[in-house]
Length: 305
Image (cartoon, rainbow, N blue to C red):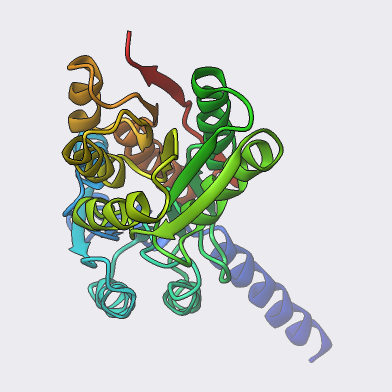
């Protein structure tokens, strides 16, 4: 009887060991002997912005190269819709989630839902405040804000009156770009006005019109993205003033404006590279490889010649 019990225990341990060595679901072979196709979900804050269109293109190109299927959901800058979108992607059985949060706090619930379903999460450009995220793929937004402030000091001088157009309140990119900017500007410049324009070109135009009325002597403007910068530039040109404008992203419209001698500068990101790196990180995680918690894409200041 004793030998029988020992035999049963040995077999049980063997079975447990065998189970622990099984590959993840995506790596298992189907009945015909082929490996299960990998499917990742991409939840993007908005496709009404060239930067995020480029980011999406980076994801789809790299996924195609690796033979990975991508399911895309556009949150349209609506955090409630994005939470619902992520829940839908989870129900569709994606193997990994790439999330570009519209709001870093609001997305946390969706990240936690993915965690509960054992679906790895990679965030792009913006972080999530809570929940387990395998990696954040983004530019160094704080450094970018510092680059913008230093450029403005170099062009308009210390102590100059400047304004700031902030992004979506609650987005990590808004906080970080503002933090980097103020770390320099609060000591070397006079930030006389700042207001949110939600990363939107039309809002950037409208907010800039209002700021010009209340602050007619500002010398420069830092916008947290190129869309707002281009809107602000339009308002400035209509006013007939000569005010330096610095954006952030390096999207095509901004670069063309710089070449035309209109926009002063942009802190250029590489959105396609961010998308590519996010897919690579997801692929590595699914293979059981360790990835860096913060994967940085380089920045470059593009300016008028």
